Amino acid sequence: MGILSRMSTIFKAKMNKILDQAENPQETLEYSYQRQLEMLQNVKRNLADVVASKKRLELQAVKLKDNLQKLEDQARQALQLGREDLATSALERKAAIQQQLEGLEEQVKGLEAEQEKLASVEAKLQAKVDAFRTKKEVLKAQYSAAQAQVKIGEAVTGLSEELADVSLAIQRAEEKTESMRARAAAIDELVDSGVLEDALETGDPLEAELKKATARSRVQEDLERLKKEVGKA
Image 1 (cartoon, rainbow, N blue to C red):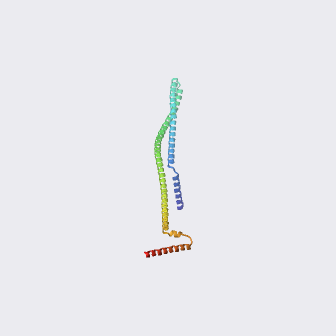
Image 2: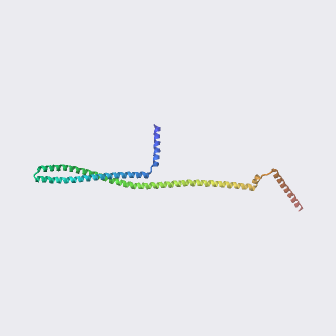
Image 3: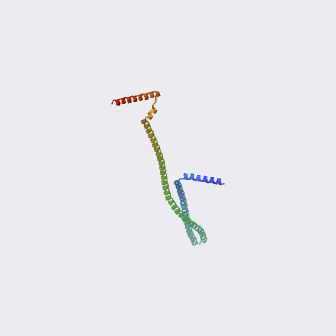
């Protein structure tokens, strides 16, 4: 049970990370704004339907009132003609229409109350939508600015890394240059001391010994000559 719980936690954490990376706050804000606009439009439509229904009932009520007055006149006219039966029939119809009119008036009152509630809801929702639109634009601007700062930071970080690589390359080049200069100086010193020439000298060893003996003989001859010159003096 413990292992399954840990696996579930890890899976949820990874999914949250993936969703967080995929989520675009600007798109989310726009979606929420559009949903609020849809809700506002629905309220407006409902309000318009209520107003239209109330208007139809009011027109029916006007017609019924006209009928009431007409029946009233007909009943009076029937009595003047001595037709009480016709007057009674007219008044009965008037009473029925009066009940219909009262029912319509109750319905109109109910629709008026519904209209007031919807109008209040519309006003509040409109205010919320307007406030959200302003907040949305501010958040989008802040998010864009933050994105720009992140990109600049990433660019600076990448530039710093590149400069570090360049500095390291320059350092290695300087070290190699100093090493080559040291080797060149050492070679010059060996050349000046003759060690390098002796090491590089090639040929017959016997020939080299003969040359050395000849050079010693010449030195000895020059020495004897100088001694004689000095003795004569």
